[in-house]
Length: 221
Image 1: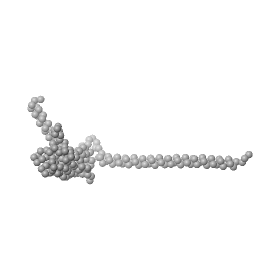
Image 2: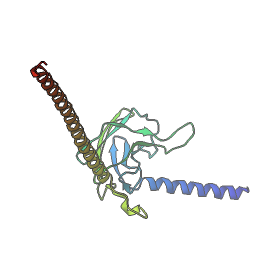
Image 3: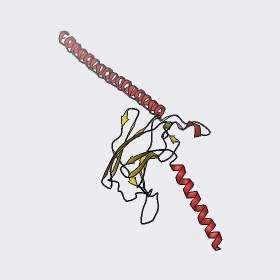
Image 4: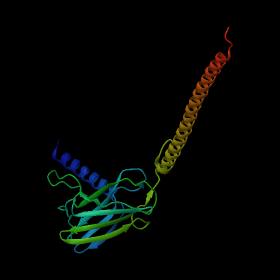
């Protein structure tokens, strides 16, 4: 490949990479934490219920350089949605200095949102001994709230996760009820069989007793 062709290919690849990175972080809340700027938001937007996403935290120093030397033990995030709070999740670095793969200064915690609505991210930990305790909530002027994926489903819209769970619970309840009825019928049949055997046995005993009495009353020739 000619030198100019290689240069053009590299430029195109760099542009595509830049566009790709921009598409993964369309809207974040930027916080000033000591000498660092911290951007908090979703990895992918729009944010669809049931689709794998991640809490993304991008950190830069006062010169605008990415901070890429933190570990998964340095930062934690707690997610709150629909009145429910998650356990603390590690924000792991995506950049690998050995291979230069990933995004410098990018830290993520994988998450699948399962309910539509607003999500709050509470980030805690330390950045080079600088404590961080910041909260960010999705809104129109911050980052996306989670929405149902019906707008991108084709040709048929799938049922929502909540509807699926409700249907499973109803089916399970019906199965349990049917099992109870079947067990009751089985118990009743068993009781009827035992009662029939008992009645039959009693009839045999009574018949035998009557035969014995009749034989004793029979006159001797």
